[in-house]
Length: 222
Image (cartoon, rainbow, N blue to C red):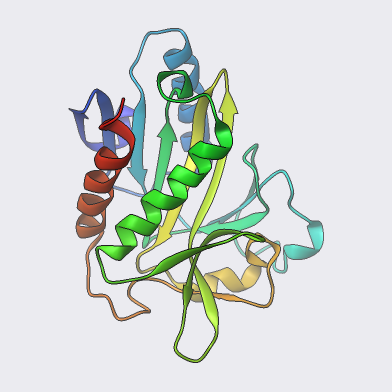
């Protein structure tokens, strides 16, 4: 994984890596698998990995074949995280969270809620009101015309109480790329991004906010 790290630092007892170039999905998935094993064996610390992917679709454990509308458009990867189809690509900040829940509370549902709160708190720093939906995964934004669109996806897997996969926030991706799937199996709502909402920010701006809000939420009580 270090091959792709633009920088690596230790903050609040966690390792943080940021990749400078898009990382292909199979490489990222193998790196996550290896890191989870290493954390479990006590050989490496917990890790948050900030990266982007080249354009691709992933199919979670609940993905339905009919929701893959353009199977030849981008590579499709079947993965072990929860959820259905989602898109990853440049302009989307993905954060893979390899964290040992035994160091916190061994409660997967609470961890997912905490991830949601992390994203919501981070979006609020940009003046965007992100919201949960009890019947839909991810974080949503209400628009002035009464519609709502998804701005962030969340999907995790847990092994030995260690989490992997994580979150994806749309900063400035090509939103038309989502049209090759039914994102998360929800056809009646669209997707949006910070730039689509008129927020002028860089990926570095987003990273700084994500790091600050994560430290406040996840490490102050550990």
